[in-house]
Amino acid sequence: MGVDLADLISKEKTTLEELSGRSIAVDGYNSLYQFLSIIRGPTGEPLMDRQGRITSHLSGLLYRTTNMAEKGIRLAYVFDGTPPSLKEVEIKRRSKVKEEALVRYEEALKRGDLREAKKHAQATSRLKDLMVDDAKKLLDTLGIPWIQAPSEGEAQAAHIARKGHVWAAASQDYDSLLFGAPRLVRNLAISGRRKLPGRPTYIEVEAEFVELSKVLSELGITREQLIDLGILVGTDYNPDGVKGVGPKTALKMLREHGSLDKILPSIQAEFPEDPRKIKQVFLNPDVSDNYSIEWKEPKIDEVVQFLCKERDFSEERVRNAVERMVAGMKEREKKRTLDSFFR
Image (tube, rainbow, N blue to C red; front, side):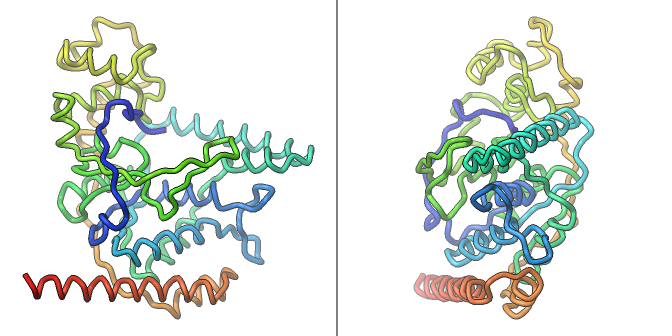
């Protein structure tokens, strides 16, 4: 779900070329779910190898990562650990959505309505431990760093960005800003097209760049107040927010009262958890400094062995993708050396 602050947040358009040379921490689980959702066959079935193991997430991870590296964008994937107990309501909601989508998917298949089946299939994706292990193995062979978060991946990505070990965090949600990421990149994808949910329609999308300090300055609030605003609107820890309170209303209330604590006595609202506890999840998340971020040259033979020999990928396509990645990395490195020489 994530907190919806789109109406308030000032965003700047950017391009992959402008992001070249930048390092970006990406929410690994979010990425894998995205690949599992969109990389599917005509009836909504995911890609599989001959043993019936799902490979959609590996396909998306391979081509997204190699394409970005070819353009000089260095990704570091951050994987979720144990979710905070406060997230239980949202986790149950998501599980229910998947169960309902599975029923509709099976019904559509029985009717022979393949378009409807594929639409519902996209909402049934479940990420299993083996899939995550496979994703980490692929990243290792590609020389791409990954970090295991103790809890929320977005919180860990924001933490890494705050420490300056990456330039920005990437996510479709704005939660990264609440967690304190100094910069957020949205719509980080090679394709400029995105399918609208439940419709056979595509829209053009562009990469966006959000700077936390600019957002706070334009809104005239502090980061703590931004967190208060998010709680009023609704976060993963209180999905429903406060009834009738949208982003603009929440901002107005904070400007008038100053803080969530001062707003609560004047409104009737029920929270699944104490809002002060929710605020602390954003202010003091469970993150780790026990990580290493280093980009290495991919081991092409190991990539081929894993994807082609063990998971039935096309060797020609895999080699082409990785070789383009290597060529792009070397070209970017050569350019950086020349640039520094002439300064």
